[in-house]
Image 1 (cartoon, rainbow over the protein chains, first blue to last red):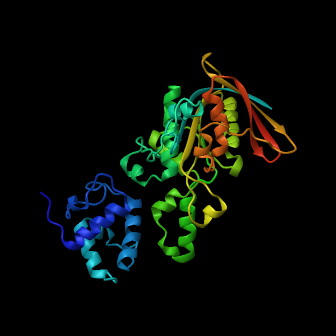
Image 2 (tube, chains in turn blue, purple):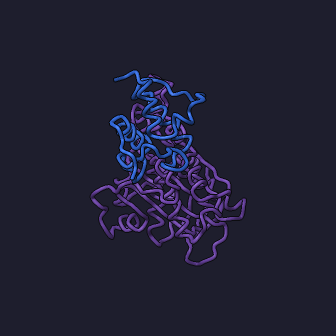
Image 3 (cartoon, rainbow over the protein chains, first blue to last red):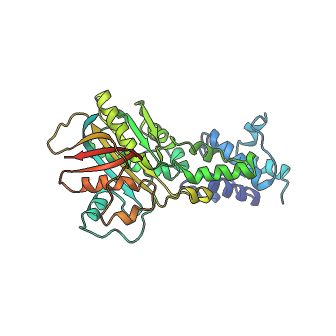
Length: 91
Length: 264
């Protein structure tokens, strides 16, 4: 049984599924604590760049490719949603 | 210059002619084309990560490439390939131009990755695990003939079978007003330098300098279904393949160079 998604996590899950055209993945089914990359959703580095672009368009702040905290920020839906909540510029 | 090759496999896919069997039957007047356009083919040979990123160019090119290899009984990874497309992906080119003009730092990495003219050839080599050489070629309105000549030349020079894939998709945005193209159209052949079977159709290709090229025109019921696609000049060739009668056609290689193709 996966942990429950918050509203912000659900919104981000929907953005991930749409932006990356994930086949057979329902946003509500993404475990907020599971890894997004390699295992878990199985995303790769091109997905990370695409996701960073979509997040900056939607939430109005830049995710930098040279941020040393990227491994932690992108580790799960929960950590990425928390980073967005702290840094978002748009409502 | 004369090149002699044989055809081991044929495939064809257009939105209203989804597959060579249907296309051939419509060309021969044996059946009407389906009323509804088919959804784009799914490039099932790709791993899920590549498949979900695959644009229309890749979907249609990989469909016809795989079907031609199947018809030829050839393992896809064994064949060198020639991928020909008039425009590549003009929809993405339009996206790239308009994004660079307005918000240049917001280019989609996936669209950028897919924007190159050899995207379909690249996805094919990844999907089939092929280390054989591939060529991506464009010659604007002369693309189909130029690609056919290139593939036949490689088959003869290398003395091995070659996969030839031609495709064009829908153009969009401002670029579509200068370079219109509608729907999806793809066609592929496996060409071999030596015919192993009496059943195989042989091609004799010759080039000729002419005052003004007059390419053979399409005349079947399939013609209006693909006429708006940039690759429409390929149709007369497939009209001849659909019939079992030998015929000769002319494809344009430039305004003053013809590729004459005798189909036996």
